[in-house]
Amino acid sequence: MTLFADSGTARFSINQETVKQLPLPDLARACAELGVGGVGLWRAPVQEYGVEATARLMADEGLTVTSLCRGGFLTAADPEERGRALDDNRAAVDEAAGIGTDTLVMVSGGLPPGDRDLHGARERVADALAELAPYAAERGVRLAIEPLHPMFASDRCVVSTLGQALDLAERFPAEQVGVVVDTYHLWWDDRAPAGIARAGEGGRIAAFQVADWCTPLPAGVLLGRGQLGDGSVDFRAWRKLVDEAGYTGWTEVEIFNEALWARDGREALAETAERFRAHVL
Image: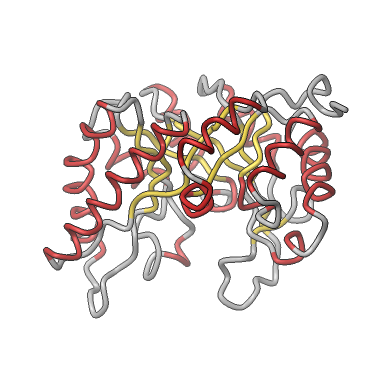
C-alpha cells in the first residue's frame, strides 16, 4: 500500500543509515510499499549485498539511488596511505556507477596524527580530487564535497563550511565536482545562505541532506543527529534556499541516531516520511 507518493513527498529520499536496522532488501521493499521513491545507500551494505544485486534490487522496486556514501578521507601525507585512499575512492566511484547513482558523497578526512596544518590538509584533498574527478566523470559520477560541522575538523573532515567546500569544488568543472548542503552541519552558519546562492549560480549543488540538531549531544557526538522537528533547524527556510538556488533534486534524510535505530525499521521510515511532509515541505 502506497502511503506517501501522492502526499507531497515526491522528492523525499531516505538515506540508508537513517534506518540501518533494515537489511537492504527490507529497506527496498518498505520504500516501495510506502511510496518512497529515493534511497541514499552506503558502501558497506552495498558491498555485502553485491553491487550488481543491489542495482537489480533497486530497479525491481522502482527506486532511484540518490547518492552513495561515501568517498573521501584524502588528507594523508604518507605516499602509501595516499595511494590506498585513491584506490579506495576509485573503487567507490565504480560502485556508485554500478548501482546507478551519479553522486558520490565525499567526506574529506581529518588531520593526520600530529598534524596541525588545516590549509595543507585541504590542499591534499584538492590534489586528490584532481586525480579522481576525471576518473569519476568518465563513469558518469560527480564527486560531492560535504562540509561537516567544525567539531569534526580534527578527526573527520577538514572542510567545515560551505565556502571552503566551494573553494575546492570550483577548481574543477561543475559536472565533475559539486557540494552537499546538509542542514545538520550548516544550520549555524550565517554565511551559508550566500554560499547556497553561489553554489546554485555555479550549478554545484549535488545533494541536499537534512537532519535536526538536538542538544545535549551524545558522547562522541557522531550520533547526535535528531529526527526532523525535534531540534533547532528551520527546515522550510533551508528548503526555500536550495529551491531558490535552482536545486530540483532529491532531499535525503540522513540521521544517525541510536534511539531511531532501536525501533522497528519500517515504523521509523514511515515516521520520517511524515516528519518530512510536516517540517520540510
